[in-house]
Image: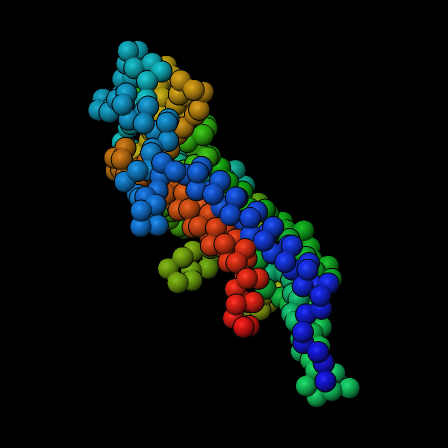
Length: 333
């Protein structure tokens, strides 16, 4: 029969290490709470949301904010000031896919290409060990399957290089009234908002090179239209073959966005505070300054709340470790 009692040597180690670990946890927990002392109400060990302070740059912008109503004529008197604008972002001109002659007066033109190809997949497979009916062993089963997928998938079998690749076309500049948006805002635009399908027409098909025309057909599937291109050099079949392509086109239309930033001549750029911090924001739809900056406050609340409960958990655990040895002795009596 095994002896479950702790040896004297192990007992002395526990008597030393448990209180030391407990003290360490209490100290680090107290530091966590101290760092957030202005953001919590410790009376009921609960988080005080009313004491959350806004980020300095948000407060600075709010105190000096200019609501732009006249979008067409940027005023030189607003140079360098924080501004909030709501208006329709419009394209500077048409976007063109030169390979397929698709023309769209939109903010963004997207060519989606999927190729029928081999895709390597790994699955865990359970097998029983020959030495025991209850012991299970896991092995990785690698298979190659045929599917439609964008790009060129990894596979042990040879996939052909796609005849056409996915591609995105953007405007040279984006206009909000008389203002030009800087690249920071363009990169942050939600392109999927109200994105729509551009049908591929017979007119587009006839503009393609003769070789591609002979291998192509327009397919309508679930109210969407795509161009189907057979792999070159092989006879046409009813079933998809490795190398066949499905090509669709999408556009992001002009729509209303809300923007926070700073005027720099006739452009909107990120606002730079007195302390050197920068801030910019863009959201689709008509949003007020408070609505656009509320997410920042919420993120701060979550972060501070996590630190509070983390610090309290450390202190409670540390206190328990410090009294655990005397407590066990007392209970043992």
